[in-house]
Image (cartoon, rainbow, N blue to C red; front, side):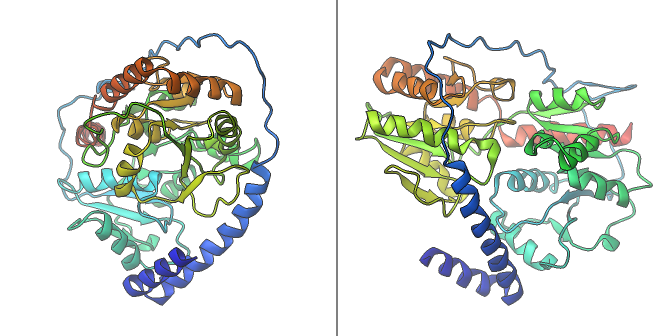
Length: 423
């Protein structure tokens, strides 16, 4: 409660009454909804006790290079010039937390691109809640001296722009507001149709992939899904901010602290599976501390844990380095958590599936197991009891996380966009 009071005081000082009031209302609605969702998530989890074989990793045949067929054109690493005054316009949903993973990735790239071309963030679903000035202040906190512009009214959008959708809903806002533009882009971070039970929203999300936009996807698995719907594009690779995520100079000799990325409000992050698995770990290793972060207000999970709530991005590296093992689960596209943990020298346990295996390699940079509590317990136990395995996974994880950086991925994406709008 004290943290929320301090947050409200800071928002009131920095952004004024209207923004703070809107934030308080949004948080209250989310908090009550979360309490109900949490009670649902902490129900019995199906488990199976089997001798599970090692899981063979699928062969990754997707093209992750910077030359990709797109109809009659090819994407090349050299930039083709377009009118330098034409801005990129990102169609982005409203936010209250600039550090949120999906939003921050968009803003990070927009900030990189703004060094050579004006970038505008259009909040397509603001509905009068916040002002453009209040949104811009959050950018100034995350990116000092940035030149990003924020627009909250569609009538202020420029006639000439390079439009980029960022969610399935934003695709339709983009189509409505860019009828005179032929080259339009879809910055996809997940296969959003999987966020819902099959019905109206999932079908509308699927329809967004079939509107002729050029894809820019997070990882090759997501590009493969986009291609299933007749689209094409490129994928960027996951990486980290190496100033935040780096390893300790000397690794600890024992597993004393396990980190779990826990978000019960986000079903694709498999909160209930993680809790059921960690309960088994705590019963067998009561001396090991379980640390959960990712969402405020989680509440009692049925056994002793350390709950840290939502931790700002700049503080995450310090948190991860204080842990000796990380559990990060995903039912849809991989989150950045495994990559960040690897970059901090923390062995990772995750679930199997093509949406994860494109980055997480079993026995190389992580342990990848089937989605059952006993399977996860077995993997965690292997890391606890084998110092040699810990060394292998730490080394493999560091190697994977150092393959690229955000500046390189931003350059690849911008080359791709510039070439295509000029083709």
